[in-house]
Image 1 (cartoon, helix red, strand yellow):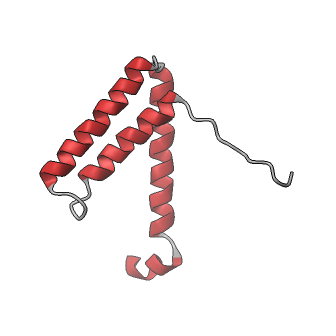
Image 2 (cartoon, rainbow, N blue to C red):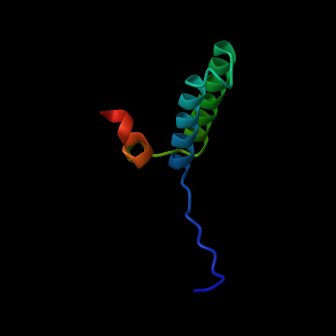
Length: 92
């Protein structure tokens, strides 16, 4: 179908997991932030995730399943990067 825009619907659980993942990345980013600033920003992001969880009444089971899928996705992405052709020679 030419010209049709496809959109993936996001759920509150996905928003929570995104914010949690972003908080984790910020904490591990010493290049972009001082450690104290990274900790403050990560805490703010986690607070936003908690607010979404509370205000949107996120189902705990759905949230846990979404976290598991997200962890799997991140793991798959990391493995794909590590085994990309340009990285293979460094693994020997």
